[in-house]
Length: 327
Image 1 (cartoon, rainbow, N blue to C red):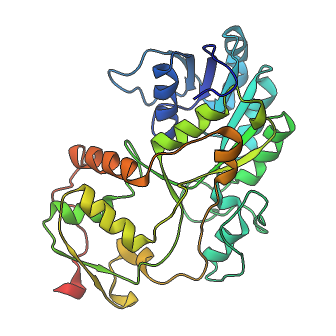
Image 2: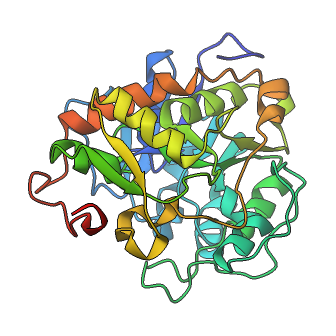
């Protein structure tokens, strides 16, 4: 969807070959845009869409800045700005063009309270909801994200008139985190009873194809300039319902059996009771950008089908800890 322009665009995508960026590139090419993907060259999808590639480590982006300018982009989409260093390495070298950067719902104070086992933030979260007080939310957790903080990324892009898209939990084809796997591994194992907690926690999700749709809705749209938008499903079901939706999409019948939290397998611990919900309000993106996400069942069905057809390595035996509570 392009609300403000019917002309094909020239778009640079930073990242763009793995998950969210990959889907964005595919949708851009599908609608006829000319795309230059700037990435490290470590991931090259086979039999992929036709687009130009430019290989460089992000820290060395300045060495290819002239090539990016020569592409004459109308827009630049940054899918992998994770830290202040990532911003400093790229933003000063970007040409005058529309800028879109992907951010995260982890910027909100509610996320910080959730990790602390506390509450206090009203939901749904809107773009002007309170932000985190602490910094570097994953520092010291062994994830290689010690310097990660989207709060260091957003301001510089906004100062350039860029658009910030704060993403909910994203699932879909090529998801490296395989967010439905906690159910699908039990489907493959033929489990007919699945242990869960209350499963009433609300954490807004979004199908990767709908994220790409939000990005495309922002491109060429004057209403997107200098704005922040939450991007998530319009209506969020609790985790218990999401499990049932995954099972339905997999055409598998299983009983959800509520067990005490201490008996839950590690990969199902998030179904226990939580204090702070992470519920998004994405109405601003729908109202200002004209973004129209499909019903959630659309994305779940496509995502589940892909993950069943493309199981992770060792999926037949990689069940991990038995569901001992049901033994």
